[in-house]
View (cartoon, rainbow, N blue to C red):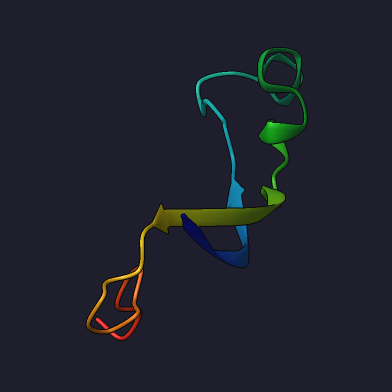
Length: 65
């Protein structure tokens, strides 16, 4: 069994905010996600594919497609 892994890093941002509420109410309910300038996160995503190599190609997965 062969394992092929790829790691990607990406950033994402969001803002949870209800315009009908005060800033204080939004902060109370949503915490730091109610930041007027958005709230960001950094992510590392690791995807692993496992399998037996194809006897003709030696590939576990064709990464060019």
